[in-house]
Image: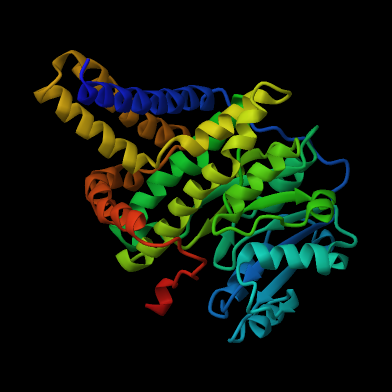
Length: 393
């Protein structure tokens, strides 16, 4: 066997293993059922909103929280105004939130701000059994607080992720396609992972915690993907994140290519860094207690972004067609499986027609990402940069 053929077969095997993992997730997602228990009494719930220069959005978010179908005397909002240079604090207070301000220009970022709040200002949690964290540009479904409380009351649950969707799907083809993608990444994948006995993972918005977990751990993740990192820290502590698809929070997504490029580079480079930082620790625990969850977390990190997998399999299919026909059926099966994976996500989430039609823009989106990935390979690691809102274009 030539070295060239061996390299091709190795790449094909790796791609097919990734596709197999996604296929198993899709099959498991059909078996998913949320775990809830009616609370004997509605637990006092604190909704924390970390905000940096969000005066244009934060008041509406606070009002969205306070409008939840939850006993008003057991629901409160705290806005963490982090290194703000605008009127975020005043806007939040006028909408009915308690405000805590933080000034630390040397330690900027959502993870650092939350860690400071839960460790240095832990008295903010006094009187609350449950804490939810939502972004400052979010709108909560009226059932969000009730669903979070019910999930956190389920046996063994101490961390819960809700469904994080798109607030502005009609703004552009890009936001419509993101809405479709989140049916897969924010619904099918966490549902499948939990159904298989893994951790659903945190998505950065619409997260719920028992106050005890936050008092004990704080927010020990400070990377640009602090949500995914915290998920791994929790797993290594023996805490699996549960998923509740009915605890819905919607947030604004990037409309322009410039906004989306900054956001995607940060997310995808950050996840690659997590594999390097946590891969060995997860691998060592695969054959111990909770080994299946560790293996799932390792696989989740190792599987490349869907666009990369699609491009890679398309290239391998072309090579098989022109150079190595015996492997063409495998390549075509992989292509079909990826398409089915995406379609399953939209079907399980019961996406509307506009979301289904957005899939026609997928080839454009995938091609847009090619120079993005090339730039990621050639530039230095990117730190946290606030994504500009559409009102700030």
